[in-house]
Length: 432
Ligand code: GLC
Image (cartoon, rainbow, N blue to C red; front, side, top):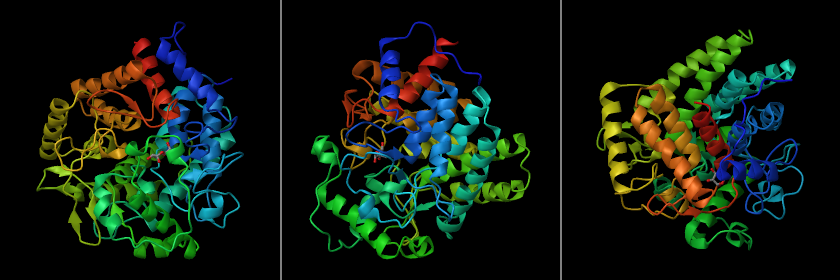
């Protein structure tokens, strides 16, 4: 039996709901983000889900991570979604992605939080399956190396994405301009499955969706040749979320490799950390005094502050002056909206409190930013973000994302990662 972090005996009604959601979205060896809207395994959703499952059944939480890693492609990539079992007419499905792999999934990846969650679990409830753990670590080494080979921007040394879906922040205003440059392919008639579940006003527009899908068609025309996509994809943007998460994931991986006495790749991982640290620093935009996205084509920073601008502590890169400016922006956000952390600058053009990644609060980003802020001594702001995560959940339920002004829950209901992050925070609070 694994050690297991304990659930307090008496649960709040939202904690009870979180447990129910985790159980309802459990497909035995993996979880789905929510039924209907997203009926298959998503990469970073799954990693966050394991944070929640560890309170219910530690080995079940580990299975979630092992299953995700098992979807690894021969080149090392772990895809952003994996079609297992029923996927209830999800569009675009495996036939559209046509990834040519034994495992039906997409042809792109998602932010690599897996190693960091594995470290958290290893500290709370180490798995009894030692061989599986060693296998997981080897897969993580290969996945992280894949990023360095196929997603590193040679100019900034930070991580680029070749599809807005890869960032996990699908319709961030930062991507809009570049997405405009993507020519719309000769697409067959298609029906979006998302609009059957969520109000169109909260989702990406049709024009954006045509381009998302065009990028999928361009990828499959090239048989998902990652080398080619890295250099020539019609959409390429350097993403602070990807960069901070990969940097942190490498730091956590380094600790795990030492703990499990896998010394062979330590040098490589350490060198990658060094490269990514300079990559993160290069995302500093002196004009707006914040870490921002970067357009490798124009060699220019995007001008907007987003929730990712506050991931420097999580990434473990602390420059006193840049930190002070970043905290000023965060305080400014806190004065403008009722609930932290809006995904996009509430004072910028393009902010929309209800539209997906153009303004709403996402629990997973709150989790990452708060974790980093705790680690660099910004207790008050970290606690404020965590308190808002709890309040939003208790006020309206465990939704996909939330309006930062009214607190209304939006998007998909009964959402796995919101349940997992809520439970994580709530349990830590109630265990002192
Ligand atoms: C949306 C989000 C993405 C997430 C997926 C499943 O596409 O933008 O980050 O992984 O939904 O929850």
